[in-house]
Length: 365
Image (tube, rainbow, N blue to C red):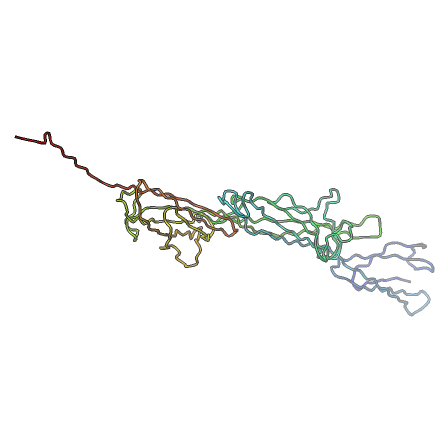
């Protein structure tokens, strides 16, 4: 009799072929009729097929059912990128000591690539052996082993298996020219933002010699590094009063005159500085006058750059001229040291007069 198979998850069910039969529209004893049906599924699916036959010599239909379970697997990949050194020093910064002297420390990035899907992933393209991971500004991304429980390719099969995490790193020299600073507000640190891209191919084992390669999956992440260029200047001017109102370069004074030196310490860079030391080879005691407007004890830089004023008083004496040198030292956020020097000259005059009197003869008539 007639055959009418149905499927509760798939339609239509189409006739495919006859095995051991004559295709005369009757399912003869020993014959096998084959049917097919295609459907798109996105989740694990259990479906049931039902077939009903109408016997030629019987009035009661015959039926049977069968089930099939299809597990849906998909590839997925994730990457996180971390800047291990979020602040680095520009190569033009004039530090004289610290961790970035004499060689600047490099920016260092760490990448963690994980399999968040349900199929192993091939990070190569199937031809080359290099993993398909790249950074748009750091060219030499290399793999490194993981510590602890996550040990990268734990089974050494060359696949990024489900729940595995592979680790990569990259280091590079960064300068402010590599980044972006807000327009019109220089000097400010530059922000270098770069992106990592990683691509993997899902692999589905189908019982054959080679797994089936699925459509590629990809992921990206970004990280930002601040590039700073601290700078420090010092100017020094002799003044004839402690109020610093009468200040001139190279003044002319009498011996023993008290000269008050005005020191202006300016942050001409893009980052705050901590003043660590100040000295003058002819003046011992420095007194803070003004400059720290917000009271944070930090010589601010960038668009909020500050100039702090100090003074020191000392008497000058011959010989003339009196030349003295001041030095200030500051520390940047990276722990590097910066120095600035300035000199000032004071001339001394000591007027004197001498009178010698003589006569032409000691006796006169």
